[in-house]
Amino acid sequence: MTLRVIQWTTGNVGRRALRAIVGHPDLELVGVFAHAPDKVGRDAADLCGHDEATGVLATADVDRLLALKPDACSYNPRWPDLDLLCRMLEAEVNVCSTAGFITGTSLDDASLARLEAAAQAGRATMFGTGVNPGFANLFALVSAQICDRIEQIRVLESADASAYASKDTQESVGFAQTLDTPGLLERTRHGSEVFAEAVALMADALGIDLDEITFDADYARATADNDLGFMIIPEGTVAGIDGRWRGRAYGRDVIVLNFQWIMGSHVDAPFTIRHGYFVEIDGEPSVRSQFQILPPRDWSEDGYMGLGMIMTAMPSINAIPAVVAAPPGIATHQTLPLVTARGRVSA
Image (cartoon, rainbow, N blue to C red; front, side, top):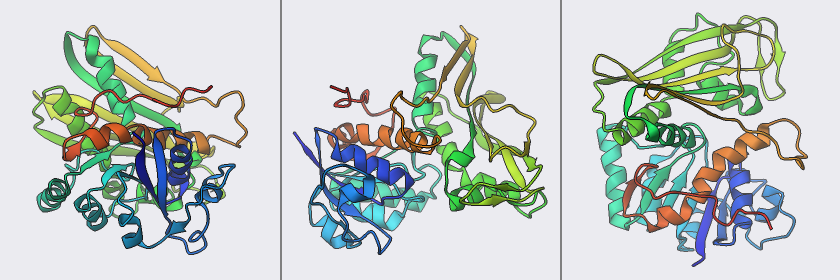
């Protein structure tokens, strides 16, 4: 059965999600939401670089999109809008999101209860993912499947974050701020809080009752002005972040989600960027796993920006059929069946 899908936003991740929907044999694009006035009225193909026109024109009219009665929404804004999410769920629209949502546990109790109630009222499902948090946590849990005992499980994302050309996103975690900026650690904590939800997801999947989830970080200075095109990292400001979200139980850190990000080349960082995702499990047996993202032979785009957006969008897009079939409420990688790249094998 073909599922009717609307695409919400056409930014960095949204464009890749939109292209994937248009090219998927089991998904039918029926609507596109665009914030920017210059995108409204344009064909979806024009907005995502698809070769053939779709006949679906972007709109900023929410009522019009919900009136289409879509089965699902691919939701890719920078930050989630609780009012809008509740409105879609109540309208019986299942939501697959890459916008700072994994379990909803970082929301306050009232907001989480409201989201749950909206999903139950519309008999719809909310699912959040991405590459990290999201797929990387699932990869870690699969890596742990061979263990008889686990002492600690660590997930590291090691990357040059300048490949993600979003000034607002980068500033939200503290890049380009002076190291003595008041509340710098709190800024980084708040900007990366979705990782706390990923810690909770992994703990739940492993049957751990956490005592607490904590956050700490170290920063690296820019050794020279670094013009990245979409923003400038001035000399002496934050150009590297080593952040750690820790799930504690049994008197120790049981789960550690670590991101080591730099911005460009002029960085005095005490860590080495390894360009990938790494899982380390101390236990019986101990496990070391990694996955790295590489361009295909026919890759024609400059840099790794496009690859990063593809791998962020696709866990959400590929999950749409499973999310539509799931019971109403909040779904996670733990509760969904195995999600594969069905329909994506090239002919």
